[in-house]
Every structure is written in structure tokens, then in C-alpha cells.
Image (tube, rainbow, N blue to C red):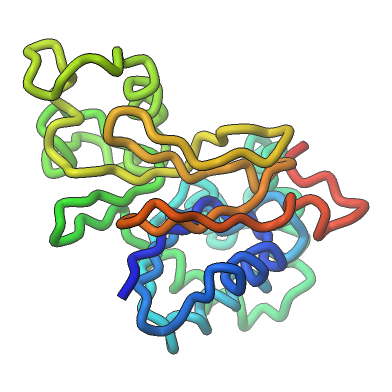
Length: 241
């Protein structure tokens, strides 16, 4: 069994189908989705439908992203959030307005059941954005940090790579887990790039909402597969560009 981690999809269902085929994903694999299933491309409803069906036949873990929470809030209230609409929500809103309202309730259940993080038995941590508490996720004060924080990746990339975890100056926040896998902060908005590691943190958001590809990473071997640039599947659409 492989453990495969999937970066931010942002409604890019066509790219997801392609990269799953490239990775030859099977029901024996554990697929961990890092969140942000919607907001960018026009197939938001279809993407969530696909994920709901996928979990019936595959071993899936679905992490909550900030865009999923923003979409859920709109589905519950229909109150337009200008920031959400400006960052991919407009396409998602239209996708849901074009869909049968029966789907709304099913999707609301999907969003409500998303996990804020997944800590595996091998002490690898999976979450959308990050955490801020020096003692780790169990001591986080603000739940929203799990899907909004950007300081974890900022800290990891700013860290002197020569600094050993045993050094007193090494950030305590990074010492609790074997590896941490996140999305949330796109590594590029203009081209296809590889997933990146900084300290023990892996960023798998390779810019699917913009002009990057969608990535699946094998957490053990670090082999990865990528879709074509996601915008090429949606000609005439802007995504978040």
C-alpha cells in the first residue's frame, strides 16, 4: 500500500483524473487530499461529486482547506463574501447555482466531515496550511490555523538548512513530527513546478488554481506525478489568474 498525498485541486477535476491515471492509483493506496477542492475552475460541483464517489471505492482521507470552508459558509447563508468571490469563489458559486439543489445538502455533509489534520501512525502530519503552537497541533489555540496559517511554510523556508534539529535555535514547532505535508501556499502561479521540501515540511500546492499542475506525491519514496497545466483543461477560463 502506498500513501499518496494530493495537492490543492481548486475544482480542477479534469487534471485530477489525469494525474490519478498517471500515478496508477488503486484501492490499495491511501489517498490523502490536502484540501481546497473548490474555487478557481468551473467544475466545482463535479469535483466534489467525484470525491464523494471516490471514497466509496478507495481509502481516502479528506483534509479541510480554507476555500472549502468559505464555500460551505456561502452554501449555508448565500451571503456573498467579496474576498471569496475575488479568489475563485465566483466560478464555484456559478457551479452551484447551475446544479440541482439536492446536491447542496450532500456537499454540505462532505464539507462538514472534512478533517482539520491527519496524524498517521508513522508520525507524519497532513494538514492544509499549518499550525502555530510551539508544542504542536494538540495545543493549537485557533482551529482556523489548520487551514489558514502561512507561517509554518514561511518558517521552514527561512530556516538555515545547516541548523540541526538538536540545536537550541531550531524551531520547536518543527520537532514534533517526522514530516509535515501541506498545501495552501502555491509554489508558483505562472508555471509547472515540483513539490518542495524545506526543513521537514513538504509543500504540495503546485499552483493548480493558476498556471501550474496538480501534484500527487508518494510520501515514502517522494516519487511524484503531475497533471498538465490545469488551465489548459479549461480554455477560455481565468481560474485565479
